[in-house]
Image 1 (spheres, protein in one colour):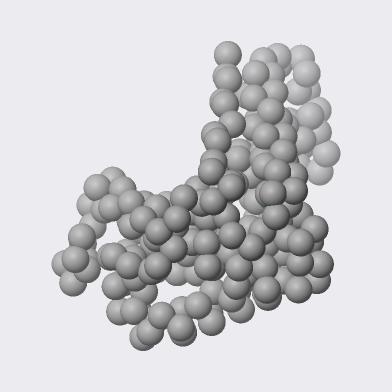
Image 2: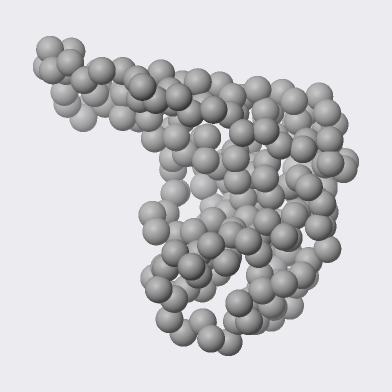
Length: 208
Ligand SMILES: [Fe+2]
């Protein structure tokens, strides 16, 4: 029996985004959790999957729903976690690595903002295991553009449901507001987790 529970977040700590907007967004996240449990608790009965094919079939529907809801759960947990709880002043190893790799902080913010404006789903600052460098990944849907063995450090939701209630079409203002709420302590903890999980080479220049 699978029973994933929704995580809770200190949404009241967010400045510039209304409680109504955040509460409605949180409800969507809970919906993904419920759907994921439903899918994972669906028993595999071979007789139900005799039509399996890659155009339309029960198994195809199940697998597409699984990745969409699973990525939806994880991305929203990362998003809510990294925009709540304070520590909004950039600091630490993540900031040092950003400056090292993107020349200066404002250039990184400009890049992140433009990726955000260009995508319909997510912008993710990740450290990729192929080179242990930071990359800003853009995705249009929870399960489109996801990169395996790439570790997310900062996750920004760009679905219209994340901002339309408060900001209408002013996506740029939402992105700027989100950036002001980034919890840099969370980002630094995630980088430390990556370093402890992966055998990291060529990263001695970063002061972990
Ligand atoms: Fe969302």
